[in-house]
Amino acid sequence: MGMIRLLVILALLPGCSTNPVTGRDQILLLPGVQAVYADARFALSTGAQRIVLPAPCAQACGRSEARTQFVVRVRAIGLLLEAGAREMFPGPLRRIDGFQIEVDDALGAGTGSSAGGRIVLGSGLAGLEPSDAVIAFLIAREMAHVIARHAEEDSGAALLFSVLGMLLPVLNVAIRFAATTLSSGVLKSSWAVQQQREADGIALALLEGAGLPASSVALELERGINRARMPDDEWSARYLESAQRVARIASSSPHTESAYLLNGRLR
Image (cartoon, rainbow, N blue to C red):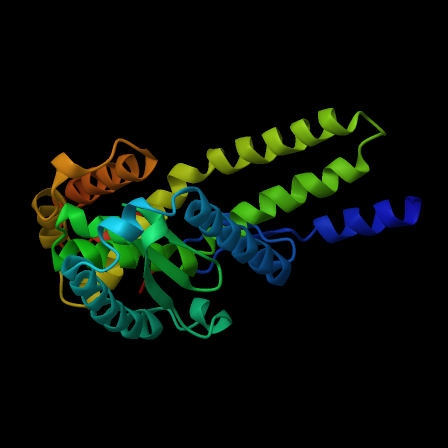
């Protein structure tokens, strides 16, 4: 047992690394393992939502013309943005084969992404009547999470405290589980705001590369979606935060939006 603990500690020592895109320190203990773990968690999460919420969107919009048109728009915009992302961030994207951009009924009005490049937009977003620019921002923001390795960072926190739990003295299993789970949650929440800020900055850079300046993005995020239909949930709150952040940045120097958000590390 002593040798196992020593090996675990040695494995944790090089766990912090500097993100090449944002310059921020991240916990990347075992990048390959963290990516697989993050992908598994994402797959389980979306699968669970599909089980818990099987009917509403599948029945209401599964075969609707609006959903079909939404899927076509998402795929076309996604292909355009992926080409730009590959050109702008060749290094960070070498670790994935490509983005898999899809529309899923189970996700409702929301978005999500995995470490391996899977990006999902909920078909419920079609009911919010988003403009092409809004769709582009939502896809670009999820691409940004992949580029900045946010899912791997979050899974790293969970793995770190799971390992530390193994090193604790023998305690009640329930107590040890609660301690490690709560600790990883606190750590992830501590960098959540920074992750959102980074994602918005990278998304703006991708959209600028596609010919859409931050000032236009800010206007579209305000007017290009039916806010009255937005659900009262965490995803909507994040959207509104992004819209406010982009508006603030767009009101500054028109040539420094992305550089400001990413500390000048994009170019």
